[in-house]
Image (tube, rainbow, N blue to C red; front, side):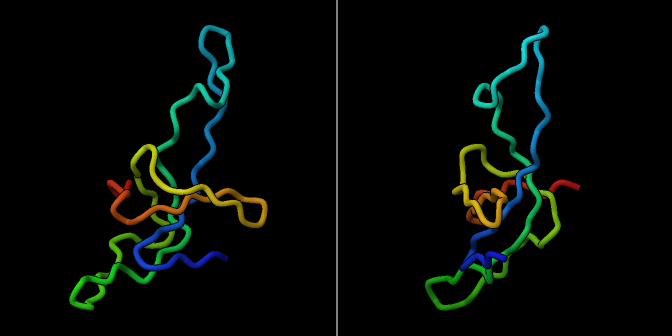
Length: 94
C-alpha cells in the first residue's frame, strides 16, 4: 500500500452512479467532481518551523469532505486514489 509523507492523506473517492437528466445520460466530465472520500492512509504529520510535529486530525476509515479541485490522482494496483494535503480536508462526515 502507499504510505503518504508529512501531512498528506490518501483518499479513495467513491464512484458516483450515472446521472440522467430528462432521459439524457450525462457524460462523466459534465458531472460535478465528488467531494467526499474515505481516508485510506495518513502521513505522520506536518513539521513546524521549530521542529515540533503536529499529528493529523483524520484517521484511516473516516469519510471526509475535501476541497473540490485539490489533490493529485494516483493509480496504484488498478485503483485510483487522491493524494491531498491535510489542509485541503474541510470536514469529517459522521
